[in-house]
Amino acid sequence: MTNQCPDSANPLRLIAFDSEDLAVVSANLQDALVRVGDMAWLPEQDRFALGLSRFDWVAAGDGQCERAVASLVFDRVRTVRQSHVPQREPNTILSLLAIVFEPTDAPAGHVLLTFSGGAALRLEVECLEAHLTDMGPRWTAKSRPGHALDAGPAQGS
Image 1: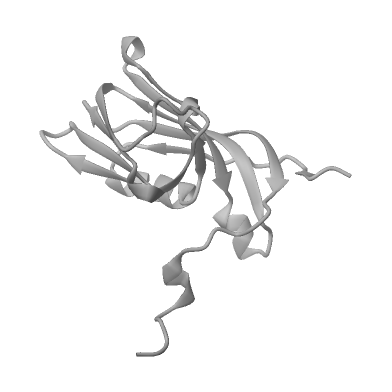
Image 2: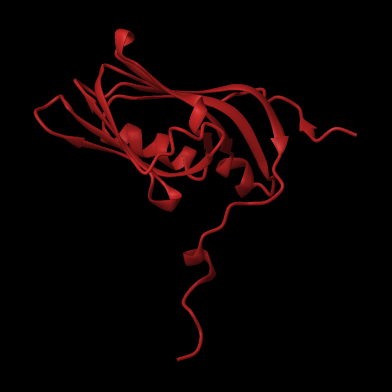
């Protein structure tokens, strides 16, 4: 018996050119798993790319618990800075929490990718151009990602 789900007839494909677009991409990538070795800055192409295991929050709303292989590519990237990303441990898995765009000298700005555990990336971009694409099979996830805030306020004193 395989744990594979049939490929989606409509793979997710999103493009972000502004903060509102990127908020939609971020929402679709909340709790995506990223292997450190699957992140690459390609300075000769002005590109930063990530391979992800995306939790499908839309399918979760219909009672399904699935993940999909996806890629996220940022173009027009000038520099990449990182904080607490274990580059010497390429098999470390990071959980993506959010992606935001902070304009500097329009249309330039910074794209901030925040991961659980305090890891973060900051991409300096000449303008925002991001592409999210489902790339491969979907499979049943072992569990639905959860956060301490999902449980509601703590009971007691």
